[in-house]
Length: 464
Image (cartoon, rainbow, N blue to C red; front, side, top):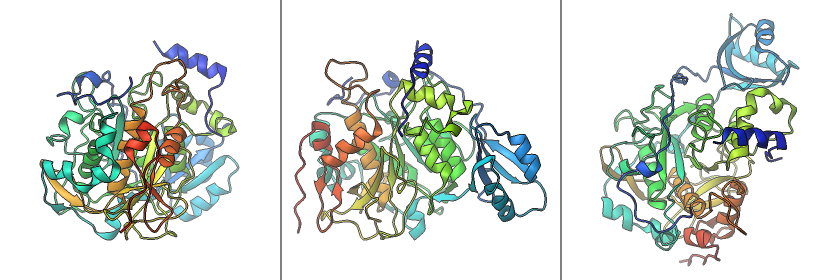
């Protein structure tokens, strides 16, 4: 069941509370879209989170002290105020035996390993090739394939914030610097969960497998939605690797950076050009919380630790989550959270200039939509340009298209029209998929940004 605020929650939310998009020119700075300064001092460096750790959620009335004493746990971290903890054995007990014992404990809702996450391109040792320029970036095959020029006559995504959870972003890149979301004081609205600071910049060099991935991805959000504001959130290290705990913390931070559920300072769209090879209950829950698709009738979610999530979702629209489907070229191998059955999330395959599914792209009934992902030019660190292929390139184009659509939904009440608070991620997903264009030799369909924004029928791509 999707979250629906009760009358009491709605009244509490109201107590916390003190434009249509169009073809507007991009402002020189992001000052008009700045959000109040927030403190991030309460956030801890997350690089200490290890894939050797375990993650558990307690039942509503259970206490971590008793569970830790019973099983000999060393409690390392808590997921906000929620009854979810990252733990290790305090003694010589193996993680395997501890996990088995926790899974049999009636006070424990779930216990699982803290799985590794990574960018899909890292699985096949893919790197970007230097080349291109601003003109190539703007005139490559991608904008025409997505019908972006026509869409930009209706919306540029202005007023929408898109979080890019990745390896960080080149914050000085000429094509990105003026498109970054900023706090009122001028600092970038983002966070580095790897180093534990408020500077979510790319780190490393071209010798590192992950270097440039987040910058390339951010450039494609900007290509699709040049008026949107980018929130860079670093969750992957220089090798393009991270873990589920860090990713879950980043997802919930991205939708509420200041920790005040009554303020609209978070991301409206989240891009995940990364994933894990197996499902985890923590990542599923984090996506549900970010998109306001959690089950508020669940007894364990009635824990006071989830109150801030309930209040935020009573106040505002849940984020749309676009996730790369993965690069195994398979309909059997799945990547998560793309393969999670969470309403309002978009699992994204990669297509080619010939209107085919790319040979490397995952596909199947769990994949919702496709976008260009082969030989795509975008931004790379150092103010340059590069070409890369992967479902990581397709997902941000869908995230940007979602921003175009959301920018046309009024924020405040308009007679006869739904507002952003009334829309759900599922509404956005349905419009994007219903108004998509057919691809060749597959039942999968590709984003048509103009058709989605204009709410018109898309024209299928010609097959060669």
